[in-house]
Amino acid sequence: MNPNERTGLVTRLQAGFYTVRADLAEYTCRIRGKLKKEMQNSTLVAVGDQVRFSVLPDRSGVIEEIFPRKKEFYRLSPGTLREFKQVLLANPEQVLLVFACAEPEPSLRMLDRFLVITEKQQIPEIIIANKVDLVGEKKAAEIFSLYTELNYRVLYTSAKQGFNIQSFHEVLKGKISALAGPSGAGKSSLLNCIQPGLGLRIGQVKGATGKGKHTTVVRELIALEEDGFVADMPGPRTLSLWDTQPEELDGYFPELRGLVSGCLFSNCSHDSEPGCAVKLAVEEGRVHPARYESYIRMRIGDEG
Ligand code: GDP
Ligand code: ZN
Image (cartoon, rainbow, N blue to C red; front, side):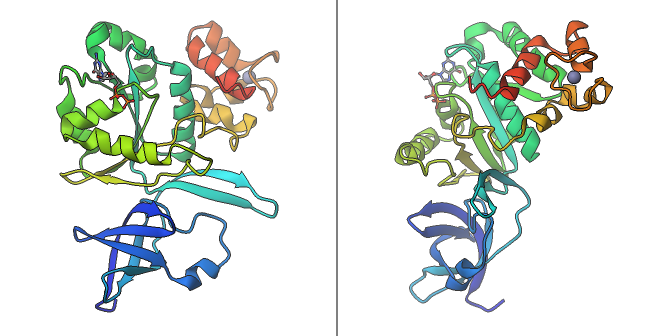
């Protein structure tokens, strides 16, 4: 590599410019023109990408190469000629799904939609059940028990009482994390508990990009004081499931995956067909009825 070249992490997108962090310094970069000319079927540079760039005398930079992504948070847009993969966030290492135990009442339907997305894109997820102080630990564990039974990790927190904040902090350290969940669940409060002002930063990024239709990609990764980065993910309404085919949906419900081969019809929709192993499992209490209902609603394209 020539002496003016560095490798770094893309942390911000703004009007055609990319902020790249390397060795704790930040460089404002554009992309080498010839990279743009190549035929692309996916986002060229996304927040979270690792890149090689050259530094110019004025300390700005030019991105020369984008390293292969380990993971992507993406959605597919059916183009006229070919499908385009819009990368929302490159190299996410985990998604934290933040829900309140109460105020607002947790929408498990929404949680199930997020879980389908993380299952499909194979990004490790952790459910953060915040506001435990409002319902008590016992009730909180009851609300989320169907997820612990499915081996999803649930971390119970209270930003208000400082409960399990240390564990929350540990989870974030050294990783690129995406935060998702309904507004009011306490994302900003939790972030403020581990680093004053952090919640506000997340809110500002959201506010600045919350309008218009180009709001679905992550615009900024915020650095933690200790190692690690966090990003706010687009909500489930914009992260629709429309690039998930109805027939593949049962593959993203861990408790249904192993059952479908037992259905009488190989194209069973697990709704009204005879000889359905999924429906039998629901009747026998092996599949939670709420999860089954989520599945059916998603299958028929109900956004609610
Ligand atoms: P966000 O929209 O997910 O960022 O949620 P906020 O952090 O703005 O929190 C929404 C509201 O819930 C605020 O009034 C917070 O003070 C409150 N809140 C956040 N965490 C807790 C908690 O653990 N317990 C209780 N009782 N309230 C909380
Ligand atoms: Zn079936």
